Image (cartoon, rainbow, N blue to C red; front, side, top):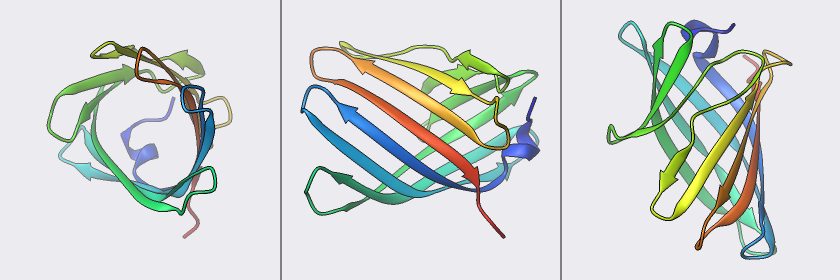
Amino acid sequence: MPGRGDFAGMWQLTRRIDDRHGQMRGDFTGTAVLTPVGDDLLDYVENGQMRFGDAAPMTATRSYRWQFRQNLVLVRFADGRDFHSFTPAGQAAGTDHPCGEDHYTVVYDFTRWPDWRATWNVTGPRKDYTSVTDYVRAAG
């Protein structure tokens, strides 16, 4: 099972978003950098280019803080609010995340480690999409 040190560093990522609500597809390419903070934390910062359909690409970024506790990773938003948690082993569901009336579920797949995947399904009155993100260790 990968631990904090195994995740630290830079990852190339690609993300496909199938937006059923908007009836369009989005594609994201970029990097995620996980930087150690203290003994049990990683700061996760993602940057890249997002494109929906034929629209011009736009810069996209997001940040999280990962905290490692035994066999569990607790993910918080950059402002400290809880987001979800997961066990970095095999193929396993993370905890769900309600956001207003919308509902986020995630399944992580570590069976091809060090490559890994996160698949989010988001449903609700405002959102209906699947997001699949593939992570590959960046060269160098």
